[in-house]
Image 1 (cartoon, rainbow, N blue to C red):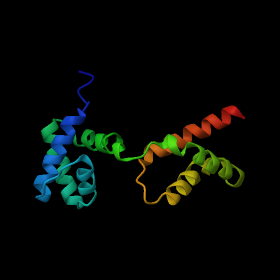
Image 2: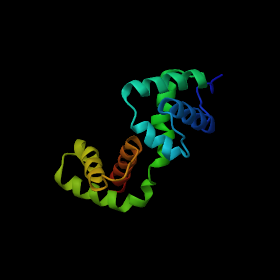
Image 3: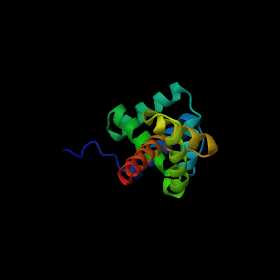
Length: 140
């Protein structure tokens, strides 16, 4: 009962692919193709997609959207550990210039601007930087 909100990834993939194929009248070959197609939808098409997914998966609209934005799209974002040293350097620079409450926001902004051609999962990036800030404060 407590796990009724969980969405199976493979089922989500297949349902989203089918719904987008129907909405856009195209064949989608990979999850990445599904992802890029979804990014191009109008708000009206997205709502139609969310409603259809919700019915197919027997989940609420919010559960479907949350799963998409908080879990499913993470597969298209690079592993942040490969940027760890660079982020730590940006944090060190930010700490010398900006107020403590602005460090995470400024560091995130600088990092995203530097890698503007790469799609980072924003919530994960923000959390990753927050954790690095916490670790740095403990090691001081």
